Amino acid sequence: MVRGAAKAKAQEANAKKQQAAKKSGSQLGLGAKALSLDCAICKTRMPTLQNLKDHMESKHSASPLPDGLEEGLRAQAEKRAMDQKLKDKKAPPSAAPKKKKKKKKKKGGDADLSLLMEGLGTGKKKR
Image (tube, rainbow, N blue to C red; front, side):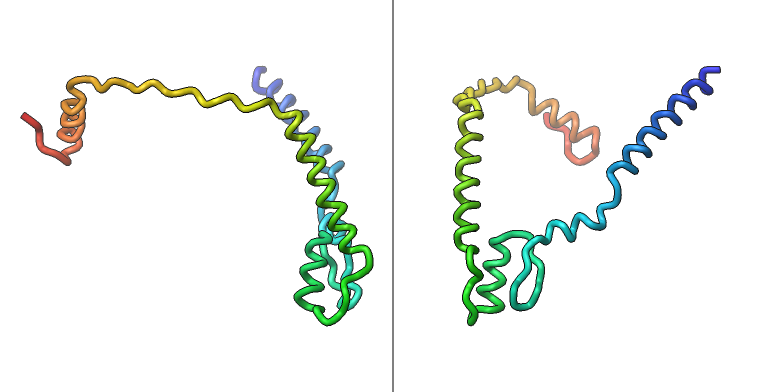
């Protein structure tokens, strides 16, 4: 029975897929983990230092920025710059784009178009 073997194979593959989905677990807690920084004044959670700085400047402009915020932002910018340099080193140099050859138009190209238009009923036949 060909179908029986295929069915068993499909069930086995589906069981593996379901088991892999169970291993990954729920994503409900991942959002809370991403919000790792707290505003000291209103206790709002922020995902990045830049978001925290923007929040402090817009909502709590009268109070000073938290200690270490500027240093943290500077360190992040330096890390991004270093990562970009490493990425640029690894990337192969881009080759100059090749020039495309121009295609010659065939004589009678308009004839083909007129036949198409006539077939669609949208144009008159050229003479």
